[in-house]
Length: 256
Image (cartoon, rainbow, N blue to C red; front, top):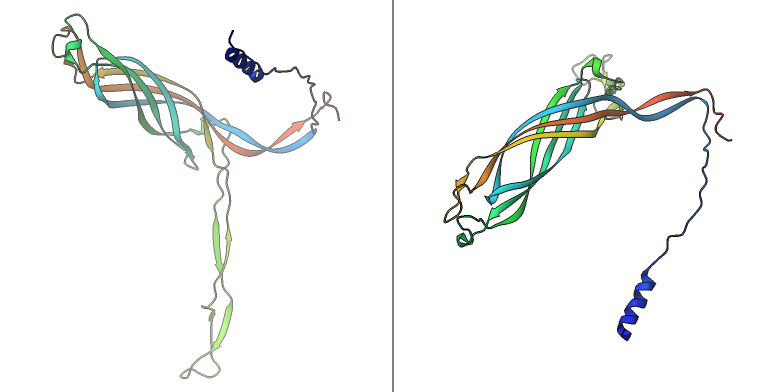
């Protein structure tokens, strides 16, 4: 064993570390009993939406065949519009398509073989819809937003009239040189969503499949456009932070 190898071996040993064992013990927190007011997320509704999507995908190069497709649903907007109870949902399906593309050199293909390269293409398929949550479908009713208001008020003033009016008469009105207002704003809790699960059933079909040129097998071809039909099922929760009262009658398991 050479000296350089020994130095490298010593350096490796110095870089290693050991994870030591540490003990732990549970801590029983102090919990108040009685009636407690708290603010927590409250589930307003739990929904399953079904979206129908028809889209045409254009590849940047010829495609011999699709090898695999990985999909992921993402929501960009999920907004409950109160007091209409209309739920606006926007998002997209991210698709990563792995496919084989025939080589540019025609002489690489024979009557029994086709030379190709593996490539990847990612595309976002957008969707949006509006659905109404019926009164009977609410698990808990949302807290409706309070309306802002503004009110103006004036003060009475009396002024002397110019010549041409009786001397004892005065102009009775409000002061136009002043402005007085009382305004009130409410900072309401906005309902929001949580994405629980999604399921996609899809059907992809080539639109412009053309036979491969040259000496390639007669049943082989390539395409650049695919028509895609998808049925997307989305499960989500609609929530809102609300102030509620929690009642507790016993606290025997906790230490003080």
